Image (cartoon, rainbow, N blue to C red; front, side):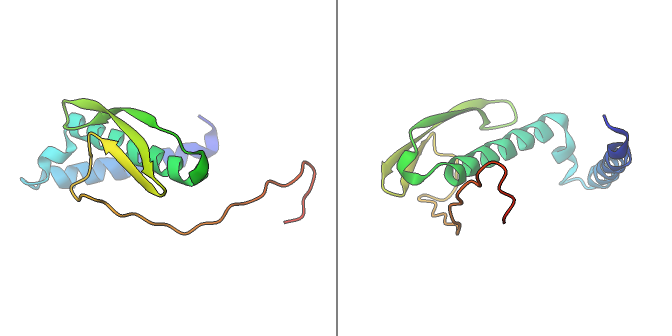
Length: 122
Protein backbone atom coordinates (compact mmCIF):
# COMPACT_ATOMS: atom_id res chain seq x y z
CA UNK A 1 0.00 0.00 0.00
CA UNK A 2 1.32 3.43 -0.87
CA UNK A 3 2.08 5.67 2.14
CA UNK A 4 -0.31 8.48 1.04
CA UNK A 5 -3.23 6.03 1.31
CA UNK A 6 -2.30 4.74 4.76
CA UNK A 7 -3.99 7.54 6.75
CA UNK A 8 -7.14 7.23 4.64
CA UNK A 9 -7.31 3.45 5.11
CA UNK A 10 -6.57 3.70 8.83
CA UNK A 11 -9.35 6.28 9.21
CA UNK A 12 -11.79 4.12 7.25
CA UNK A 13 -11.01 1.04 9.35
CA UNK A 14 -11.53 3.09 12.52
CA UNK A 15 -14.84 4.45 11.16
CA UNK A 16 -16.05 0.92 10.38
CA UNK A 17 -15.02 -0.29 13.84
CA UNK A 18 -17.00 2.57 15.42
CA UNK A 19 -20.08 1.79 13.28
CA UNK A 20 -19.91 -1.91 14.14
CA UNK A 21 -19.71 -1.07 17.85
CA UNK A 22 -22.79 1.15 17.57
CA UNK A 23 -24.75 -1.47 15.62
CA UNK A 24 -23.77 -4.18 18.11
CA UNK A 25 -25.60 -2.24 20.84
CA UNK A 26 -28.89 -2.37 18.91
CA UNK A 27 -30.70 -5.74 19.24
CA UNK A 28 -32.36 -5.28 15.83
CA UNK A 29 -29.16 -4.29 14.00
CA UNK A 30 -26.65 -6.54 15.79
CA UNK A 31 -27.08 -9.35 13.25
CA UNK A 32 -26.21 -7.00 10.40
CA UNK A 33 -22.54 -6.97 11.41
CA UNK A 34 -22.04 -10.72 11.34
CA UNK A 35 -19.36 -11.50 8.77
CA UNK A 36 -21.65 -13.65 6.62
CA UNK A 37 -24.18 -10.82 6.33
CA UNK A 38 -21.50 -8.24 5.60
CA UNK A 39 -20.15 -10.49 2.85
CA UNK A 40 -23.67 -11.01 1.46
CA UNK A 41 -24.12 -7.23 1.26
CA UNK A 42 -20.71 -6.87 -0.37
CA UNK A 43 -21.65 -9.41 -3.06
CA UNK A 44 -25.03 -7.74 -3.61
CA UNK A 45 -23.30 -4.39 -4.09
CA UNK A 46 -20.91 -6.01 -6.58
CA UNK A 47 -23.89 -7.37 -8.53
CA UNK A 48 -25.61 -3.99 -8.74
CA UNK A 49 -22.35 -2.30 -9.77
CA UNK A 50 -21.81 -4.89 -12.51
CA UNK A 51 -25.43 -4.63 -13.64
CA UNK A 52 -25.07 -0.83 -13.88
CA UNK A 53 -21.92 -1.26 -15.98
CA UNK A 54 -23.79 -3.62 -18.31
CA UNK A 55 -26.41 -0.96 -19.02
CA UNK A 56 -24.14 2.09 -19.00
CA UNK A 57 -21.08 0.85 -20.88
CA UNK A 58 -22.68 -1.18 -23.67
CA UNK A 59 -24.92 0.43 -26.27
CA UNK A 60 -28.45 -0.99 -26.23
CA UNK A 61 -28.05 -2.41 -29.74
CA UNK A 62 -24.94 -4.33 -28.67
CA UNK A 63 -26.25 -5.84 -25.43
CA UNK A 64 -26.40 -9.62 -25.36
CA UNK A 65 -27.54 -12.23 -22.88
CA UNK A 66 -25.14 -12.68 -20.01
CA UNK A 67 -24.88 -14.29 -16.60
CA UNK A 68 -23.91 -12.93 -13.21
CA UNK A 69 -22.52 -15.70 -10.95
CA UNK A 70 -22.31 -15.80 -7.15
CA UNK A 71 -25.32 -13.57 -6.42
CA UNK A 72 -26.58 -14.12 -2.87
CA UNK A 73 -30.17 -15.19 -2.34
CA UNK A 74 -29.39 -15.34 1.37
CA UNK A 75 -26.26 -15.11 3.47
CA UNK A 76 -25.77 -18.86 2.86
CA UNK A 77 -27.01 -19.44 -0.70
CA UNK A 78 -25.80 -18.01 -4.02
CA UNK A 79 -27.27 -18.29 -7.51
CA UNK A 80 -26.31 -17.32 -11.03
CA UNK A 81 -28.63 -14.67 -12.44
CA UNK A 82 -29.20 -14.83 -16.19
CA UNK A 83 -30.01 -11.59 -17.99
CA UNK A 84 -31.41 -11.52 -21.50
CA UNK A 85 -32.91 -8.83 -23.70
CA UNK A 86 -36.59 -9.62 -24.38
CA UNK A 87 -37.62 -6.51 -26.38
CA UNK A 88 -36.15 -3.10 -27.12
CA UNK A 89 -35.34 -1.63 -23.72
CA UNK A 90 -36.80 -4.62 -21.86
CA UNK A 91 -34.74 -7.27 -20.09
CA UNK A 92 -35.52 -10.46 -18.21
CA UNK A 93 -33.65 -11.69 -15.15
CA UNK A 94 -33.83 -15.24 -13.89
CA UNK A 95 -34.13 -15.86 -11.05
CA UNK A 96 -35.75 -12.46 -10.57
CA UNK A 97 -33.84 -10.63 -7.80
CA UNK A 98 -36.15 -7.67 -7.06
CA UNK A 99 -39.22 -7.28 -4.88
CA UNK A 100 -41.10 -5.23 -7.47
CA UNK A 101 -42.16 -6.82 -10.76
CA UNK A 102 -41.76 -5.28 -13.21
CA UNK A 103 -39.00 -2.99 -12.01
CA UNK A 104 -38.79 0.13 -14.13
CA UNK A 105 -35.40 1.83 -14.18
CA UNK A 106 -34.27 4.82 -16.21
CA UNK A 107 -31.23 7.02 -16.37
CA UNK A 108 -30.00 9.95 -18.40
CA UNK A 109 -26.73 9.86 -20.24
CA UNK A 110 -24.94 10.52 -23.45
CA UNK A 111 -22.42 8.69 -25.56
CA UNK A 112 -18.94 10.20 -25.76
CA UNK A 113 -16.59 9.98 -28.70
CA UNK A 114 -13.06 8.98 -27.65
CA UNK A 115 -10.40 11.63 -28.17
CA UNK A 116 -7.69 10.90 -30.68
CA UNK A 117 -4.36 9.99 -29.13
CA UNK A 118 -2.44 13.13 -28.26
CA UNK A 119 -5.53 15.36 -28.55
CA UNK A 120 -5.69 17.40 -25.35
CA UNK A 121 -8.65 19.57 -26.38
CA UNK A 122 -11.56 18.97 -24.08
